[in-house]
Amino acid sequence: MFASTSEPRTKTGCSTGSTFRYQRREPEKTLLHRIVREHLATFLAEAAERYPSGDIPAFIRAEFERYLRCGILRHGFARVRCPSCRDELLVGFSCKNRGVRPSCCARRMADSAEHLRDCVFPSVPVRQWIFTLPKRLRFLLAWRPKLISLMLRLSLRTLFAWQRRCARMQGIAAPLGGAVSFVQRFGSSLNLNIHVHAILPDGVFFEEDDGQVQFHPLFPPKCSDLEKLIRKLVPRLFRKLADEELREQAEWMLSLGQVLAVGSLA
Image (cartoon, rainbow, N blue to C red; front, side, top):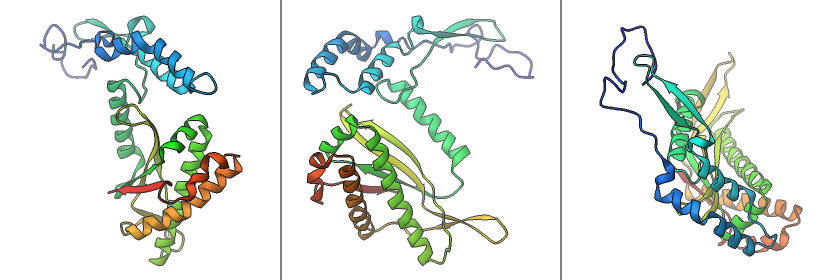
């Protein structure tokens, strides 16, 4: 809207020559902002009483505090000027979070998807894998964030090993894989629901004799493949939790009906 070009100057997009004009969102006037602003202190005090340590996880408090500052001019803004009409306006700084603020969440999601499509993933089919946890383990991982990395690392290793095994059965001697993953802490109703979205190429890469990298597609996973992945992943994760002296909290994982579920979406 405000970028100048080598073309003759026009009023298109300016406040004086167009019916369109940028309007600040004014988040402080929305119902969600008012509710959070008026009840955040009470919520934090009551929530802290329910936690054994006397305080809720820091990321929850930080998420709401950044939301209350998001888009508010007194917390920082940029002054933008149109090179054509010299009109100026103020744009408040955003929190850039993926939690409470709907507009920031949508913008980050769109920017990330565009970056992955244009700069990261080659033109090959991809598959989304979702790693989710039972409710008890969600609270455990919320208290011990390093266990989230542990869960993600073990899950991806299990997936990569399965892909390499399938590729070798199809004649690929040295298959290589990759993934992009996103950790989500909330569900659709802002409930605690720690889970991971991982995007993997639906196949493997390999290097030819002349140094060229090629892509080899794999067959979609079957239900039997998912069951095998679960049976391999669950014991490994349980052993790691035991190594972290968390055996008492994770003992119930021995029941496969309650353990980690691995799903895939085409």
